[in-house]
Structures are given as C-alpha cells and as structure tokens.
Length: 146
Image (cartoon, rainbow, N blue to C red; front, top):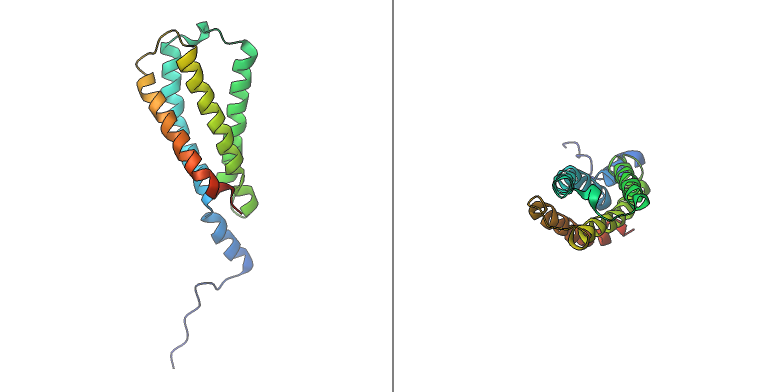
C-alpha cells in the first residue's frame, strides 16, 4: 500500500499562521498602496512644481501636517505589508488606507480649489488619485474584516 500524502493543512501552527498572514487581504492592500505610492508621488510632485505650489495660500503648518501625515501613513502601510507572523499587524493596512483616502482627498481639494490654474501634469495626477481612492474604498472592507 503506498504511503498517504500529507494533507494540505499539515504543518506546525506557526507555518499555518504564516501562510495565512502571507495571503491576508489587508497585507495585499498595503502592498498595492505602497507600490502605487511612487507613481502618485511623481505625478503630484510634477504637478505641484509646475503650478508653483509654494505660492498657494496654504498655511505653513498645514503643509507640515500633510507631510507628517504622509510619512505616518507610509510607515503604517509598510508595517502591514512587511508583517510575516502577525495577522493583527496586517490590519494596519485599514488604518493606512483610511489615512491615504484623506490625504488623496486633501490634495485633490487643494489642486481643484486653491491652485490658480490646472497644469498639464494634473491630467495624470487627478485621475490617478481618483482611481486610487476608488480602489481603496472597495478594498477597505476586506482589509478591516476580522
């Protein structure tokens, strides 16, 4: 009689947990948001430079708060994306996703309401941010689910 193959669920509890963590929807959400971040940053960076954003009537503390919030969101998403053993840590993607929604909405509002003129790089930055907002809203229920 041939030996029975191991069942698909065989393994130590740590191996099984690690496999679930690797496939966690919130971890995948964090990875995708981090992967799209440099593209969004490049689009908005070019837009802000082209439109001379330093001349916009935005208080200096608000600009510092936006930059600080961006760094915090990136750190939160990175913690969720790099989690190898903690399913709970992957859930930080939900918090990071919510923060990213607010940041994308803030930059869109600033560009559309405060910018003196729309410049050509905004033709890429605005739709990209809208698409990222839409995707994030659709992904958040899975990322926040227990």
